[in-house]
Image 1 (cartoon, one colour):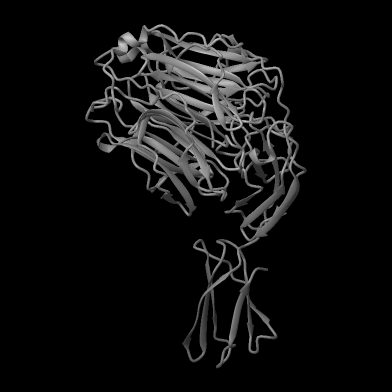
Image 2 (cartoon, rainbow, N blue to C red):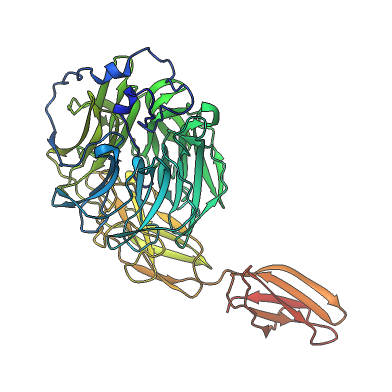
Length: 607
């Protein structure tokens, strides 16, 4: 559910003895990595090809060069790290004298300046913002190559603009993806990483790691996903069951291309739904509800077992079918959803290499009620780059961040959206209801409304904290005024409700919810509610007689919580027998040897 960037390379393609990562690719990977249906071309010559002619329609975007560094292998990812109400940007890549850099640029009213924050320089980097510790600041995860070419994975905690590396055993990788999501439903963001472990052919191996976050401590946990690299990963609740599912693509062990949607069944169980996606690398994936029917569809493009493709897979009650949208097939491509004209429909932007015409292309497709047409707007024609929709100037229009290679030159630029109609934020959700079920809780609310986005297409963000307005348990990644610090879908998806577990009995919690529209604008938060968590209801495990004068009864409850055990001889009158506390494993028991014939009935209850 959260924004990530992929490293992109142009110049290195022409260097036969160096690895290159572009659109999540590695040229020096120990295997021949030709796209399917390869047309013999010179990539070096391709870099020098002329631009695609203008498509002739009126421009709705004005280029605004932001003065940010351009570099091969550049990573660009946006987020309001300082909470001042505008989107900042992290840029990483190879700088002067082949020294890698990682710099966060602060956005002040649309002007960008070096924040001065010191981070490890990484080339061929991937990065993702996410508030993993619930303090309201966007933290950071990155992978890439350090100055010595060593594969590196770093997680930084952001405390008021001070970034500190998080201790933990993270496998160093590059050439993959980094994504945050709360896969286990405990409220904090977990981390999924793909990549390869070395730049040396025959040494590096593809890996996929899922790190569970328990109070800021990350542990690698088992999962069924294929080990892969040079692919793409995206979380999204496609079946609206409240658990984030994930699509994973890439090159697996042995070079086979893979692509699958994995349904999150809870308890750490993921199931391949058999969506029949073609194996794919050198491309991208992105979730979005293009047809406004209330479930997530999939934008999917790159080098696949079906050739070079850019497709939309329509989600129809959990079944995915090719929408036959007629999009240009590209490789070394990137793409993103965004409602640039504020008509309530998700449009899409793609960049990449057209291997048939042997040209680079940057195409903005307009969504006309589910039919996509080339908008005719012209941009730098790029490949091996990144695409991000961001309202960097807060004028109610999604602007466009593009990076990549154009005729051998690296480009990082912004296009200011001058479309006439500004977006307005949704209304706040109403009728907040909470149902406490021991250490878990169910939330519900009524739908918000929006002047541009249909109600069914709105997504929602749940916020839960231990103080009024707090987000210590579930971070909204929004400001208190509703401003979205990430241009992304809501963490609750399209559902008008949510579920949360692993709460502490006796603790008071505060919660609210906001709506997010198709231009990623957040509504005000609804009036805040509160509740207290309880111990879970005890479950009877056994009641056995240990002798003529002794009975042992055992229950399972919430670790560390106090319970009452009551006895009765007739199931009508009950008396308190003991008040045991559940152990660290949740178990508690009593032994009744008070009389020659102990009481006939026992039950445990919460106080």
